Amino acid sequence: IPEAWGNAFYMGAHGYITGKAAVAWFASAHSHSFVVLVFHFLFRLLAVNGSPHIQIFSKRWFYGVLFGCVFLVGGAWYFVLYYLYDAVPFVVRYMQPVLREHAIGTSLPLQEYSTAVFWTNGTFSGPRWKPIFGVFVMASTMGAAYGFMAFAAYEIRWCVKSKKKRKRTK
Image 1 (cartoon, rainbow, N blue to C red):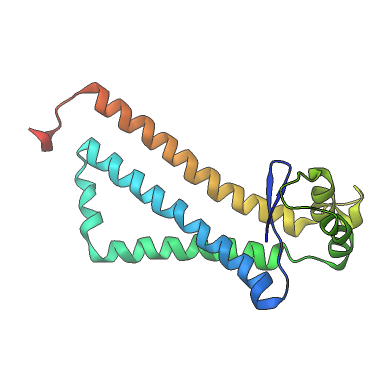
Image 2 (image 1 turned 180 degrees about the vertical axis):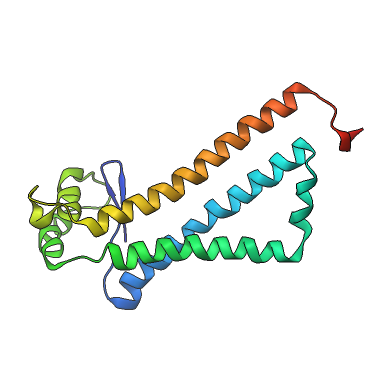
């Protein structure tokens, strides 16, 4: 169940197959777009630069590399949502009244969700390291993907604007 928490996105789940596994599978499927976009930007960057390394995109083994990256990132995101964000009884007890009173479309206070998920027993006495590590894994994969896409877009634009003739375009 998609929910909005201020400016954050929250997935609620009920049951085992339709809940926890489904949310983890949803995250895994969403992660594939990052891998595909990174390889797309890499191909465009090599094509614009006239690099001979673009030949690897036509090799059969390269599809194995692409699918391997998809499964690696997808597996990491599945692991994060399935194992690292596993709700302990405190989180479930803390969030039930908030979710019961919530109407879809209204904004909930982000502090309540953050306190329940990332801090031990809803206090600042100690962090819950599993969800914090999960945020780090997901943020680092997204940050690396977006960082490379921004770098590649800048390089592609610079190459197109420079109007230099490459060896392969003569």
